[in-house]
Length: 315
Image 1 (tube, helix red, strand yellow):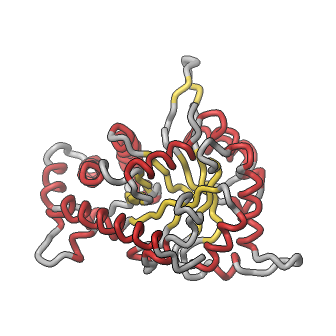
Image 2: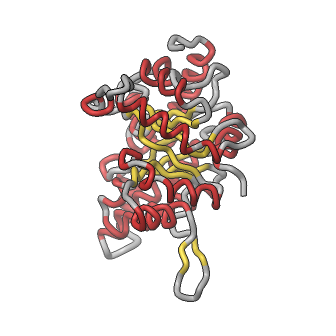
């Protein structure tokens, strides 16, 4: 079973593109033509809605699968539409993988003991069903987790990742404006909370370092805090870092590459709305042009990030 970190590093190198496309679909993003087609397939509006989401996601994936190495479905946007939305999420994961893309499920799971084990097995592992067989229920390649419960909330995810060749990204320094309310607080030993979390992630990932030199226990460090990203990288030299905050959340390419290693590796930058709704920033385009505009934006994002890596401003 190949290490997740090795697979992601290889995919990034093959496409020369350290980006992941977030798939956070809302009905208002979807072209009328897709909604009308989905409505004609089913009598159940909930099922039609989920089908429209899936059709939209497939269009996005088809537009970029040859240039973007991974997608990141945010589970909340599927749970929003109930059980049919979750079916659309599962079908999206399967479709993206069929197109050669890795899938990071953004679920930010956290719990302790048997509950954490159930989350880990259901998302990253295989579940034993009534006939005794083992089935991958979600089948994601990696998942985001909230490590702020401590080791017992993360250990099951680490163990399943070791067994299955999957991976996790632990929240370390998030991109939201109020992140510092907790994550920047100082501890008695002088470290800030996010620094202590970075140290834990580095420790948790020691046994899952692959041939690439990176661990399948990664971290989430927002692009909106580049100085903290530099510090986090120093504390987690082997961690793959998932970088939210680019584009719609306000961070530009220079800030987004702050957590990369000195040789320009080890991180992957997420964009969701700026890719899914790229048509909004292009004169004369409408939602019907979403796939074409998403591809253009994905190429632009790739080129800007690679240029920023060649001229690092945060070191």
